[in-house]
Image 1 (tube, rainbow, N blue to C red):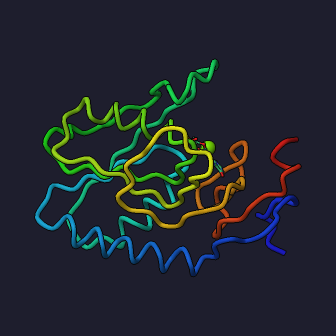
Image 2 (tube, rainbow, N blue to C red; image 1 turned 135 degrees about the vertical axis):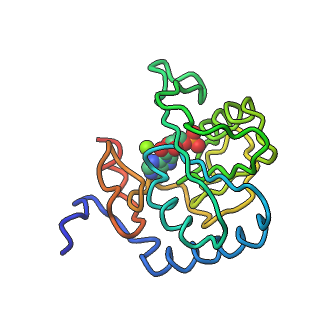
Length: 181
Ligand code: IMP
Ligand code: MG
């Protein structure tokens, strides 16, 4: 048994091969859509890290990578987050693709989009590996979507539970009691 797996792992929903194949498809699509543009892939740490690394290598265009980090305010005011690391590059006029691990309620992505818009990108789109529409509160314009997932707590390939399990090579669901405890 792979010791990276939590005891509470329920099922592997997306194995490494499924992830690899879908990321390659998204990369090919982005390659077509952004030809000739000043493409910037922007990711919110830490969850999007693995997806970004694989996606960037499957886009056959010149591009740059940039990172933001946010942490929720203690009060948890509907998706409003505190920026703990801002962009390094000027994105004014550039074609920015926000690369996310998962869109759940949509509040986080929507807030990050509003922060990015303030930097006046020429184009701004969202690419998410996972879309969990069941709990959506804020409508999110998703241009590229890897997989639509059921309303389960997922770990692996960047997704964590209390900071752990990001390094699983697949996406697995956890048993409910593990998430609540
Ligand atoms: P939001 O609900 O769309 O604002 O998502 C907020 C954040 O919750 C995401 O960026 C993830 O960090 C986290 N999140 C949502 N669903 C999951 C999940 O199934 N596993 C791990 N983290 C998740
Ligand atoms: Mg997280």
